[in-house]
Length: 392
Image 1 (cartoon, one colour):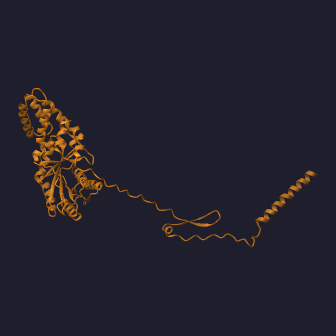
Image 2: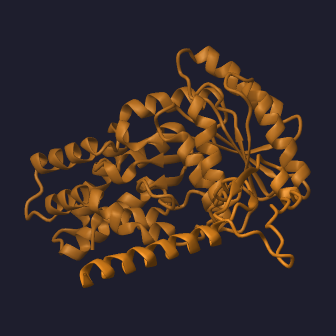
Image 3: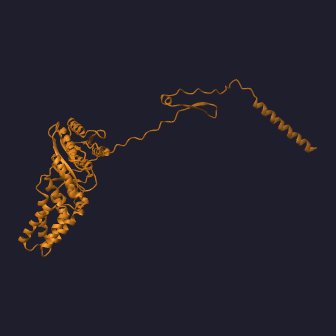
């Protein structure tokens, strides 16, 4: 009986709880309470209206506006700083060790031969062969050997220092320590100096033009470049890159444009901008001498309508030896070459090319390339060159 009454009590409690829950569920809202109304979305701002907006509903049923994703920010273009090259003074002295590594074979061979106790005809033939192999040229070699034989007879016995001094004196005479190797790059009042760079493609002509701009900027000059080699697509791009590194502007036109027109515009802009030097890079095609003569002759004539061509630099590759000389002679017949820029001199033991090219063309070597670095072009110094050949 007791168990039966307990079950009835539990059932009553459960029933009361169920009725209470239904009452709470369907209870009418009180007078002080207001239903939650959806809020209006705020007006779109100018930034938000630029892109599509979307609506979203939060957990309480409130509609809100979600702004569009921000536009991606493009990375800023980083302009490389303009470089400040070292001045030309002392460049070849700083590069002497590099030059010596490639040239001391010639000097050591000559010193060893001249230091022998007995200098018979066989030894003199060896000396002659050594000089010819080094691209000194047959004519200069015979003249040097003849002079050496005469002085050795006068000296009689020879100490190592005397042999070295004797050889140094003869090499300096052949290289031409008294030649004027000054680059004519002084402005003429309101008119800039004009340098025309010529040479066969593949000798490093355009690179040498860019490096020469660095040399002149390092000396405090304002330079403008003219990309008149319009037959090679990469030539103008390459030259412009060199110029941008040192803050020198490049005048250029489309591939295939008239080279003389580019040269004229470069000189005209150089006058307007009051720069110190205009350097014009020219094409180096050599299929016919007549075509080359017409093209370079026209470039020079057109420039001279506005300014004087102060310097015509012929770029030669030192590693081509006597072949380079034959190419050089063609250019020398076409234009009035005033100086030679000899590239890749560090890559050959045949330093005698300096002697033979000057003798054959009758113009001095004014610049030498002693490596692939941006500042490896240096004004030629005869004494530094000869001392590098003879070693320490």
